[in-house]
Image (cartoon, rainbow, N blue to C red; front, side, top):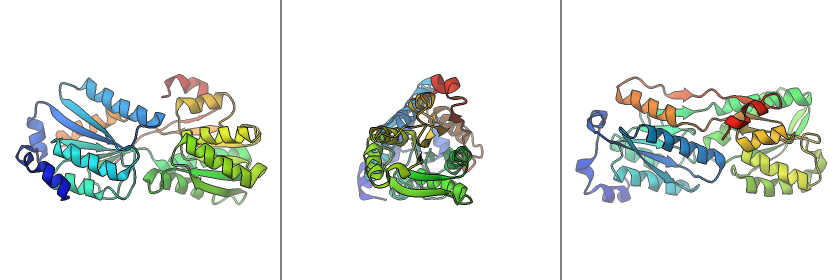
Amino acid sequence: MPRSITRRLALTAPLLLPSISCIRKKTKIVIGFSQMENNNPWRIAETNSMKQEAAKRHSTYELIVTDAQGQTSKQVSDVEDLIARRVSALFLAPREYEGLSPALDSAKELKIPVFLIDREAAGKAGEDYVSFLGSDFIQQARRVAEWLIKHTGGKASIVELTGTPGSSVARDRSQGFLECIAGHPGMRIIASQTADFSRATAQRVMENIVQAKGKEITAVYAHNDEMALGAIQALKAAGLRPGMDFFVVSVDGEKAALQSIILGEMSATAESNPRFGPLAFDTLDKFRRGEKIPSKIILEDKFFDASNAREFVDQAY
């Protein structure tokens, strides 16, 4: 166990709840939620969903939320702090796939159940964590690629803006897209750069790509809506017309993206639902009752384009 957490637990270890049977005996169950960051609409919506669901179940649960501010090292420290505060279970939204083993090992040693929320981390379900709750990122990317293939006639020069390097979501959203276009020689990736899921970063990255590739670009595939919106700003500044000179497709389904689709700028986005609160706490309840929990619990996501964006925009986050 890391020395830091050993020191923190020196005086509190006898008070820890080492098993699920102990969880059942508590009148107020303290749960930790380690959020990777709260710097974009998707993450904020996810955090709010967790808080709102905990508030609905306030007679049973108390939720402590931490913010790793986009730093894996801080997220490990956050988890150690939550363990030192004697949480009975952990919801963890991992920033990276690798790098969180110290946090998972600490929780495992103290028999604190961990539920991975919206992103995967290295380890084995049922041993290092209970279950992964999230979307099928590969399928999201395939749906976006299929839409683009259909609407370009299978011919496009594509810029890919990728998410946080080392994250499971960036890996899967790239893999799914590439697998889907592999059978279509006319679909070419002409540039692929990370923009770390950030709108501002995507705008800067896209400005550089436009200088290098210019009007060769006929499509942009961004791993999330924030990057897609940043790319649109850069392309418009360069005198290109979104929805006419190029297609922009993405994943997430945030309100700003649907509004952009309605305006005719963004072309399509696959939903990645951030409202994990009800599912997370329902899964924890089942676990406490001793029910078998699947290693993966996959959400069903919608898909938005000009055909339905107006219908769902008011429901978006």
